[in-house]
Image 1 (cartoon, rainbow, N blue to C red):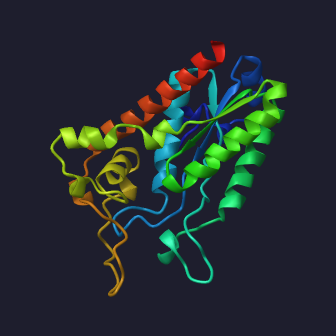
Image 2 (cartoon, rainbow, N blue to C red):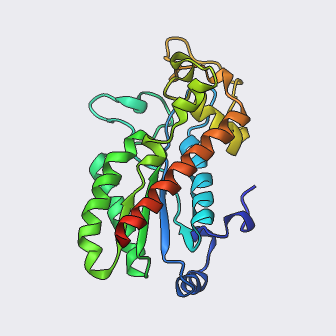
Amino acid sequence: MQTRANNELSLEYMTWPEVHAALNAGYTTVIIPTGGTEQNGPHAALGKHNFVVAHTSRQIAQDLGKTLVAPVIKYVPEGEVKPNPTGHMQWPGTISVPEPVFEELLVATIRSLATHGFNEILLIGDSGGNQAAQDQAAASMTLELAPAGVTVRHVSDYYADNGQVTYLQNQGFSAEQIGNHAALRDTSELLYVEPDAAGRTETPVPAGWNTGFDGRPDLATPEIGKAMIQLKIDAALAQIRRFREEETD
């Protein structure tokens, strides 16, 4: 159960005087996590990315220190709606927004947080479809907000360069077993952070439907998930620290 105690760094669990006090105490770094609401096969819940990035963002904030976490952005690009559904929109339950809308949402969120005194804003996305807009928003908003002393960073290594595949290959898993979507890595992550949202078998796949996953999610374990989560956290922390070192050079 989510409680205030395990969400003490989350803006949505704070009152505005608490945020004001935190800013005055030097909590001027904030993470904007992005997830998604998408199909993840018959075995994993639609909110997979949201559960995972909420967990990892809290841990990254704790490890960085003086860092708060904005609410997870749960509606992201998942495919076209018209004239025919594409991508994850081919499966029921998925919610998609156009790429420009997602980028504008990021921009509006960044501007909101910068207005109140956050001067280091970190974008961390748990889904591949989020990365391009995050990169563009970070670049454009850094240019806009630099005169006010605000830096916006897209923490791309969290998703794109976290070493997960190499780790699993070294454990003896093949590329086919590892897979890409709703597969070994992300199913294991979900088993670790939100076990009730993974391992579903109650409802069979309707006849004629693609299952929506690849790889071998049946090989997933919470222990693998713990390792996968830590690799994401470590990759993000290392990149953020490099960003900071570059700024002081």
